[in-house]
Amino acid sequence: MRLDISEVLREVGKVLPYDVEEPPLVDEDVECMQPITGRITFNNTGGLLLISGRAKTTVALACSRCAQYFESPVTLNVNEQFELNRTSTSSRSLQTVTVIEEDENPIAGKLFDGQVFDLTEMLRQGILLDEPTRPLPPTLPDGRCAHCKRTPEEVLKIAESMPDAEAEGTPINPAFAELGKLLKEKE
Image (cartoon, rainbow, N blue to C red):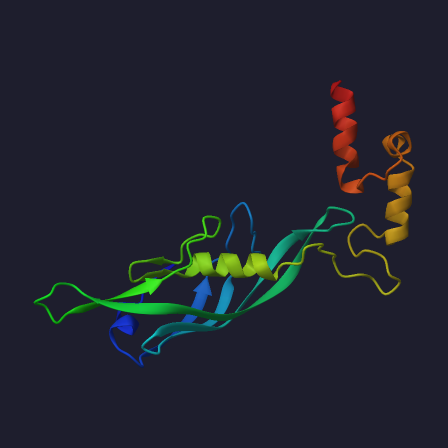
């Protein structure tokens, strides 16, 4: 979703609330299982554009133990600020244009295209930052994985009992065990 925020940028002190109701986001980095909902507020303080609010959704993550996918809730707390610079359009004109100073990181997607804000990109970046680095699904009361029904110790025993693990002397991630079997069959 791309939002025209020119109204906020024109007037110092202007506050624009926006109710977020986005469809589930799916790309190579993020897979949302539910729509993204929440509220975001844009505030022009004169020198800064403040973007604040909250949004929530549910994402699909691969378990770091068994590699099976599970749904995990994500809550985004948005607190961003961007410097505003006002420039005149010409020496005779009294008209000014507000330019948003955005960090020039080649990895991150751009959030602004002139006075148009890319809400989808901001939500995507926020979800990526909120996801755990080693996702684990909920566990059952006895400590077993809710998906594979194994304890972490059982997963390690399975990995250690695989032929490649003994040959190499290091345990194999069970998530890649089936892939290893397929590669051996192909040889």
